[in-house]
Length: 72
Image: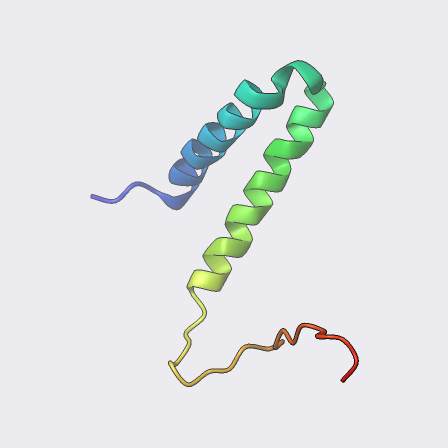
């Protein structure tokens, strides 16, 4: 039986936040950590929405990157 998405998201949020705390925790306030937690949660929501969007192999990207190569 699959876990509910919200429980899975909480586990992912906790894991990602744990990695951030391990690396930068001594430089972040409680308010900043809460803001990071919310941002991670929002990112997971966006990721979930993107995964539910059906795409065909022939779908083109919305934006095509064309690097500037200088004047000819």
